[in-house]
Amino acid sequence: MKNFQYVRPTQQQAALETLAQDDKAMFIAGGTNLIDLMKRNVVLPEKLVDINRLPLRKIEPTSKGVRIGALASNSEVAEHPLIREKFPLLSQALISGASAQLRNMATVGGNMMQRTRCYYFYDAALPCNKRQPGSGCGALQGINSKHAIFGFSDKCIAVHPSDMCVALVALEATVLVTGPKGERQVPFKDFHRLPGEHPERDTNLEKNELILAVDIPASSFTQNVHYLKVRERASYAFALVSVAAALDLDKGTIRNARLAMGGVAHKPWRLMEAEKALVGKPVSEETFQQTAALAMQGAKAFEHNAYKLKLAPNAITQALKTAAGLS
Ligand SMILES: Cc1cc2nc3c(=O)[nH]c(=O)nc-3n(C[C@H](O)[C@H](O)[C@H](O)COP(=O)(O)OP(=O)(O)OC[C@H]3O[C@@H](n4cnc5c(N)ncnc54)[C@H](O)[C@@H]3O)c2cc1C
Image (cartoon, rainbow, N blue to C red; front, side):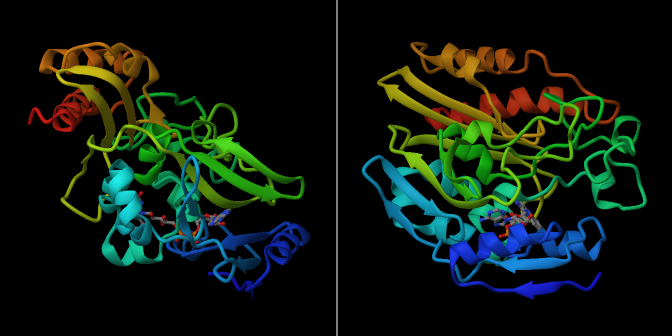
């Protein structure tokens, strides 16, 4: 691990200015991802700007829903009574992630900014366009069992590892950020990027911007929701495939639906066509299987991840069944 400077400002403006002054400075929040990356020489900041003393930890109701500060820990969000009651999908997704100890340290902003778990990204001796643009993608012809089936490019086939973000994209959250040009709001679906020609950029957060909060609008998705995470062991493992399913039911008919997947693309993968197709349909296994088939259109596997082409539709069907109370 390389030496670095460490500063801990108490004012937001000072944090932004300190970051902007130094091209190799980075924010640090819980440190659960960044410190790992530094130890492995994957990311080499020369200065860490610790944001933990900024007042960004509140979780509070707003006239439109709830605002969650970027420094609220994953545990605080998951266990907050307002989140459990009004946004149980988010609570479920958070609790499925990492371990209790990690969730106590991990923050909302850090979770959104966490990097992929692709082996080629984590091993500084191997080629990776995300870590070192132009070096190639080792996973394309290599060990690609955990990799994308949607939205990849010939430069990168990595997936975004977050559970929380899958629920947030389904709940149509908005991200409040600030930076040299002032505050702006980014719809959650546009926060993360597909790799295209520039896999080194995971998100549309601009240089020197700070995430302040996430706003989630109130919705009717408070009861018939389910976050299904399929992984190699029961805890402390990233999703092979995950599904955030939320249904608004009128007796046996679907009035409205939200559906998103994790572990399948470079960003949380919202399934809007499948959502639309669910509206007006009866709650049934057949409806959910048809939705899953629609959701999988355009999916493509690599040498070692073809199992996801079967796992993903099964997971969608199962998540929708559980959300609807059918299983
Ligand atoms: C063993 C292990 C298992 C895990 N399992 C899961 C899992 O199953 N599911 C899951 O979703 N996650 C999992 N994680 C990842 C974990 O959720 C993330 O490490 C954590 O959310 C990162 O948050 P942090 O506050 O620690 O971020 P940090 O490590 O402090 O920072 C991460 C990145 O975010 C940036 N950043 C932080 N805050 C802000 C901000 N406010 N504005 C702008 N940039 C910011 C930092 O500059 C850095 O680039 C796991 C991690 C580990 C180590």
